[in-house]
Structures are given as structure tokens and as C-alpha cells.
Length: 466
Ligand code: ADP
Image (cartoon, rainbow, N blue to C red; front, side, top):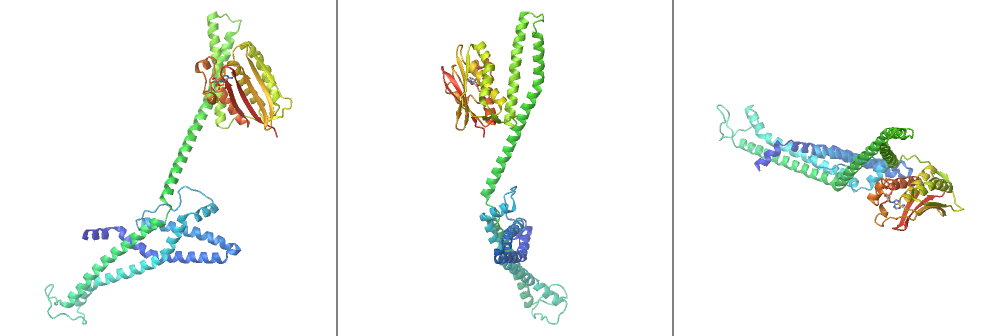
């Protein structure tokens, strides 16, 4: 008991709480007068519009008061009050007002601010009566002794008194009474400090309850902030990965082109080179081309990821593009695999939205795949037909087909259905991924169907030109 009393008296917080109890009166009164004035003027002038602004202002005003109260509750009362608003949230004034009105913590803050008025009066009255009265009582014996020593004629000394020190007048029952009052005063003083400290503590707990947003919402906001920080970190990492690919691809192009040029000049027929070296040169040539096309593919994909594909979509006569691809690829199909490449264009084909060069690249890629996966003597067919939404182009072959488990994955990057065979063909597994990126950028789609052993059909859909 004595220890906790001593601790309370030594603790600076006790006096800060009493300071708050004194401040609560002027603050509470100011809040009350300000809010009541704002709201009543606001309500009475609401019809002319100004009032609505005043009412809105009153909401911001009481939230400002709540912020001040939170600081005081933390610093003076030692309360742990959560923040009034979610940190880092930036909203316009109108959005903020709507959010505040829909938030329970706003109304709780209003109740707190308004209750501060009666609480302030009560705490002020208690503080300014209890402390001075108890201090005055404590001072009584000192005043008595002072009066005796100064020989005040009004003081009647006791007859059966005793002396405190030599030559002093004797102190009697009156002095004892004065001493008792003094002791009572000290007791009252200590009790008052304990009571006021307790009231301050309780009001601090009340502030914790009424002020600040719900801790679970705070946790949610913190989790959201963490998630968004992680997202932006991931985006930054993604961005630098793309930049690395783009830069590396650019840098690789020059040496690859240089190797190609030198190999080409070494391969010239007029050069005296033994057959074995010529064969090696052929391998270098093939591999360099492969490397070059891989670098090009990576560049296209990195650009697609960064939404930087250089694509100009405009109304295109698809039949012409199909014709061009067919004419360019037919000799190759015949030479390489003895395949027949045919095309069938619908008569009433509308113009479709596409980038003609990129569409040509897409179709050439699909035809090349078809050629690579169709045994000798097969047929590759390019067809166009009109559709209510636009134009459909199909590239069908009579080749080996694609297994059902591979079919959903062939448009993924680096996916090769039959690893060993695909490598023989020099494929990197990026072709179809690029095809899909290019078509998506044109607003089109691609899908694939296949029956293993019978062939595959790739279907492209392009939007009709407006
Ligand atoms: P690649 O560079 O290996 O050809 P693609 O992305 O163009 O990569 O194709 C992915 C995989 O899809 C290929 O490895 C191949 O197994 C399969 N594929 C693509 N087109 C055909 C086709 N017409 N017939 C059979 N399989 C095909």
C-alpha cells in the first residue's frame, strides 16, 4: 500500500494525468461550443446550401478535435490509442467526408468529444477543490506553530502544555488538534492524488475505446500495405528482368550478325576449304541462325510484356496476306518435306483489324510448325472464312498431331511437346507464345485442336474492321 502510494507520487505520469484533468475543462467547453454552434448554424441554413458546408466542416472539426485528444490521451494519460485514420491513405475531401460518415469510429469520436464537456467540468471542480483543500489542511499545524512563535495574541496556549525546545512556549491540546488536522490534510491530499490519477487512468481507457479506428482494420490496412509493397517490389523485379532481356538481346544481335557475316564469307564457293571444315562452317551457320532467331523471339516477348510491341492495327485484307504466305512457303514445304501447301479464301471476306506484317509473321510461323510436324507427302491447308464477329483463319495439317495432355500447354513459353524431337527441329518453344502475344496485341485470339496421328488445326479469330 505504502509502496504503491510512493510509486504513484514519484511517477511523473500521475501529475500529467492531473494536468489533463485541468485541461479537459477548457478543451471540453471549447469543443462543445464550437460544435454546437457549427451544427446549429449548419442545420438552420442547410436549405441555402451554406449549411451543408458547415455541417461537413463540423465533421472535419470533430475529427480534428479527436486527433488532438488522441495526442493528449497518449502523452498525458499514457493511453494506447490507435491512429484516427489509416496511415498513408490519401483521399480527396469529398471522398474523405463520405468515408468518415460511413465509419463507426467517426461517431464514436463525436460521442467522446461531446462527453469531454461534462467530464471536463467534473474533473476540473474535483481537482481545484480537493487539492487546495487538502493542501490547506496540511498547512494548518505549520500555520499554528508560526502563529505561536510570532506571539499572535489570538492564539490561546494550552495550560498543560509541553515544550518542544528550550525557552519555547508550551504546546497544548490546540496544537494536537492542529496537528491532527494537518495529518488529515496529508491523508486527504494522498487520497485526492490517487483519486484524480484513477480518474485520469479511466478516461485514458475510455479514449482507447472511443478514439481511433478498429485495430482489426488497422491490421488489415497494414497487411494491404505490405501486399502492395511486395507487389511493387515484384513489379520492379519484373521490370528489371525485362530490361535485362531487352538489353542483352540488343547487345547479342551485333556479335551474332558479325559471326553470320564472317561465316558467310568463309562459305563462299571460291574459297579453298577442305570438305570437313566446310561441314563445320555449315553447323556454325545453322547454329548462328538459330541463336539469332532465339534472340529475336526473346526481344519480341520482352516487348510484349512491357506492352511495347510495335504493332499498328488497321483494316487488312486477310486474303491477300494468306496468299502472300502461301506463295512464299509453298516451295519450302515441297523441298523440305514434299508437302503440298494449299490455301482457300472465302469470297465474301470482310476486312479484319490486324497488323499485316505481324499477321504474315504469325501465319508463316504456323505453316513452318505444320511443315516441321507433318511427314512426307502430307498436306498443309490455309483457309479463311467470314464470321459474324470478323474473320477466321485456319492452318491445318495432316501431321503427327499433338497429344491431349500437351495441347493446353503449347502456347506457353519454352514449352515443347516432344522435347527430343522438338530440339531436332531447332525449336525453342517460343514460337506459339509469340504468335499468341502478337494476336492478342491485334485484338485477336488463337486456339488449337488436334488428333494425334491425324493432324492439327490452329484457328485464328480477328475482329471485323468497323
Ligand atoms: P517450337 O519452337 O518448338 O516449334 P512452338 O511454340 O512453335 O515451339 O511450338 C510448341 C510445341 O507445340 C512444339 O514443340 C511442338 O511440339 C508443338 N506443335 C506446334 N505446332 C505443331 C503442329 N502443327 N503439329 C504438331 N505439333 C505442333
